[in-house]
Amino acid sequence: MEGNKNIEALFEKESFEEEVSSDLKEEEEEEEKAPLEFISTGNMEIDRKLEGGIPTGSLCLLEGGNDSGKSILLQQIMWGALNEDKRVLALTTEKTSKELLNQMESLKLGISEYFIIGRAKIFEIDASYVENNPQLSESLLLVLLECLQKCNEELILIDSLTIFAVNASENAVLNFFTECVKLCDRGKTILISVHGYAFSQVVLYRLRSVCSTCFELRIEQVGDQRVKTMEIQKLRGAKKNTGNMVSFNVNSEFGLKIIPVSKVKA
Image (cartoon, rainbow, N blue to C red; front, side, top):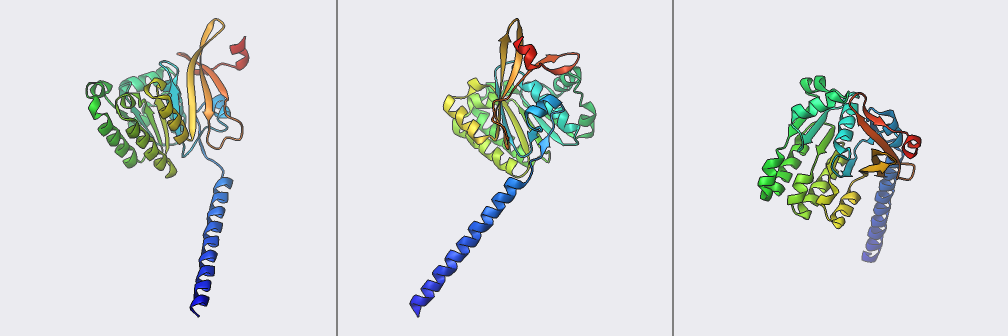
């Protein structure tokens, strides 16, 4: 009798495991079928290259050198999101709120009205304070993370994280990105700009692995002109192979202006 009970218990356990496995499979299939939502950049050409825009729920890494266009691209995305009635939080270590608003205004990306009514929030982080107190970098990373966890905004832009990464341990930086992934799983979309030189190649590789979307921005000499380029290295939910390239310049009259490939090669 005891043997029969053990056999029955075994069958019940196997049946339960099959049900759980089946439920998980169904959930995964539903997730795959569910269409991705996007946050428009407000630029049709960039949205086309991104197959719709920035996928919501993404942790996006923008990597590039000085003046490669990281900040301008983040401002473009901020403008596009606000025009779609999204709430945006921008954390900047490189500009004051006034400087950021003025620059966006000069690029025909004005967001002052959204800033006044509170749909666009800008928090300044004093980079010089961090530079003078490098030992506080890891503590400030935790404070920054707590801020992200408590905020109600759907889109979060960090420009840039370099000042923290230079002075914090690799584990602290990786932990920050890992916690950001959890926030993205709960519906937030987070874009972080960094300078590649701030990380070792091993850590940079791990950061790219953690992020669901990665862009690399560069300045390239093409003929007699210097252009900014954005290479899409990784894109969440992309149907095409990554590697799409967007070339652009920043024009005070038209803002961010896409340069057609034919003109770049000419």
